[in-house]
Image (cartoon, rainbow, N blue to C red):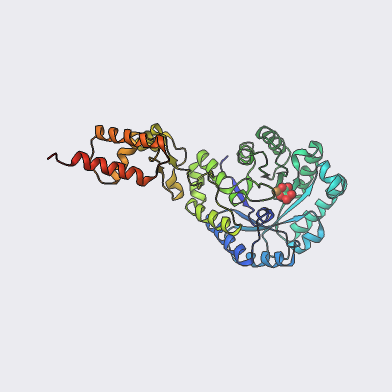
Length: 380
Ligand code: HCA
Ligand code: CU
């Protein structure tokens, strides 16, 4: 799974998210933030989608970012001619290969698909621009059709071929099989794109890398059509657990939260409470047993280290599940002196109130301070 690359599609797939409307300024701000984070590629909406989309694509190409800029087009010469004039470093071409899309979307047969693929690929290559060929709805396409077309485009010399789980139907085992099979048919890199309809988008991305894919399509917070695709942050969480050195050497993880906040605000959503890494409670430990171990050694209950992302852990002590170790650490924070025995006593009081109602930090602090005053006041 090492040596993977990211194709960041917030400004393409993400624009297909129901709430998305990106002004030129917002697109530029997002592109710069993605570049600073260190993504390998930034994918932009097709320049034929609208006049402004084309202008925005040209403007982003002129920013001189380190990330390579891609645009995403249908497998059609009309689109390709416009795309190569925008200044992009590469073009991602896609065409539906499943019977569903052949019948109801573009209505073309495999012969036609293959011919237009060859024409578009040769044209884009002749302009000295990177080219990726992807089949839409790959997991519901005929395997023989798929392998045939991938073999053909590989021979012409595409930089990458792509597999797309357009409807989010694939499970990790199917992903492993398909990528593994494709690996034996093509010599170019394999890119994968997973929708998250059944919650498998991160697992599928990881499995694809295990099976030999090299590039994963992501978007910030996973925004995209329907409930979206593999999220950048979630993939970072998965990958840092697998290969910390590589991930830390490549990506500026400290910038993740600001990047997510920028995108969340521009599409008017909150960062989900259970988001990997940046969900508000992602590094919060609550149960007494957990808190005790975390205070002794964080690796007991943390696979990810908050400091890798510029974040801090939090011990949630204001509740009835708390334990005296957590309370003792709060006593220390308050700069009060209580013995272990006294900490256990005050913890019992906190739990008692916690059985009656929801506690907040102030409640606990008051109980601790009252208790401290009581035990330290000399009897007269
Ligand atoms: C779509 C297209 C796509 C393309 C993926 C790709 C998909 O919006 O339907 O270029 O690999 O999910 O198939 O996003
Ligand atoms: Cu998609």
